[in-house]
Image (cartoon, rainbow, N blue to C red; front, side, top):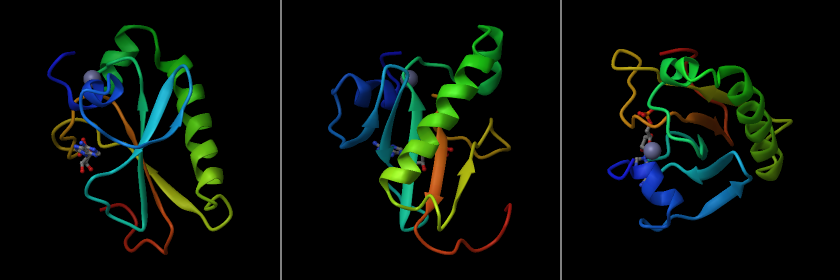
Length: 116
Ligand code: AMP
Ligand code: ZN
């Protein structure tokens, strides 16, 4: 997807510091952090939403490597024991603004609120 900001970061057309990368995903710090640590875990394949990923039969595979990568990043940031929150903003009412599927990892401090 040429216009997609995360695809551009992956192709190095936009500079960004990659915190973690493997064949399936890459992770970057969110440009507008909502907590001390705020990282985006982004599948390399462009799927706009969870439902698009499902329509390509990718959901099971994606779930595995996506969560594993999140746990790996939490260890790298040394917040695996203190805890963190994983969030997917799905679609318009979920507050999704970038339509390239991604998982937010938030931590590094006690998070206020629970769900909204
Ligand atoms: P969402 O609202 O769930 O779609 O999340 C999109 C996130 O991407 C937001 O938290 C933005 O701050 C973040 N974001 C947008 N552009 C960039 C960028 N160039 N580098 C890092 N994070 C970005
Ligand atoms: Zn993309």
